[in-house]
Image (spheres, rainbow, N blue to C red):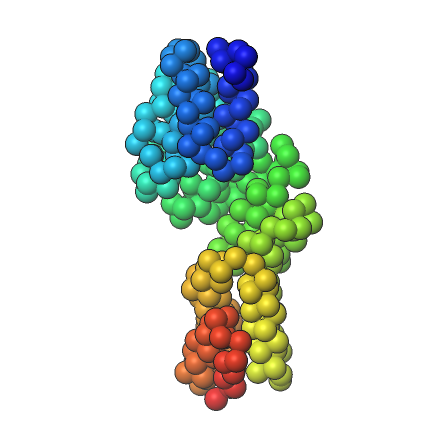
Amino acid sequence: MTLNPGYLEARNNLGRGLRSLGRFDEALTQFELVLKSTPASPVAHFNLASVLELIGRKPDAEKHYRSAIALRPGFVDAYIHLALLLQGADRLPEALAHAERAVTLGPDSAGARNNLGNILRTMGRRDDAIAQYETALRIDPNSFMAHYNCGVALRGETRIAEARAHFARALALKPDFLEAELALCMAELPALYEDESSIAERREAYAGRLARLCRSRAPILIWFARLQNYGCEIRDAWLAKPSRPARTDQVGHRQWVFQAALQLEDPGQGMAQDA
């Protein structure tokens, strides 16, 4: 680099390498130098925007994504990233418009389809989201993220067996994909309640499995599993059970859910038995 500091492609490559290593401030410096030399380059704006977004300067990132699009109206990746940024800011109608534009420009882009599906799912349009994920998987059957996202949408429609198949496929493609591993575990909840003869033991075994799974990974995912997936989906599986008798032990069940959640933080916490 010191021998030829004006070599822009080398600076771009260095910036991308630094970005992949998490050295965002150094990557930012490289991309700013490239943009200063080539202000009309859509790729220079895009690369700079990607790092600005990672360091939390999202208004600046949005400005440069828009500049990339203005300079190259067919820049599919810029539309995808801008849509993701807007989705994260809860500006869903704008995000949807850009995601749809990305699909129009790149109908054979599995990434564009997956991104559109995510926004549709966030907006509660799960059927439309599933259609986008399925199209993405026809384009790229090995997209583990499309399999996972499709599974999440199918689970929301209570199409549990199909969801389980997609989570399993995502794990087969990416064995260290913790979210898919948790989701696959969660998708087994309805089966947990099919045979009530040993439900207390089955509940305890399930909770122990999930606790071990969470403790082996990042602590933030323990919080995620505990609050968002674990209690809510166990509750839903129980309350939605068609054969559930009118006089069910809902109080005992809630107590078990809360104690199961606590067990994820405190290995010594016991499990509640059925009332």
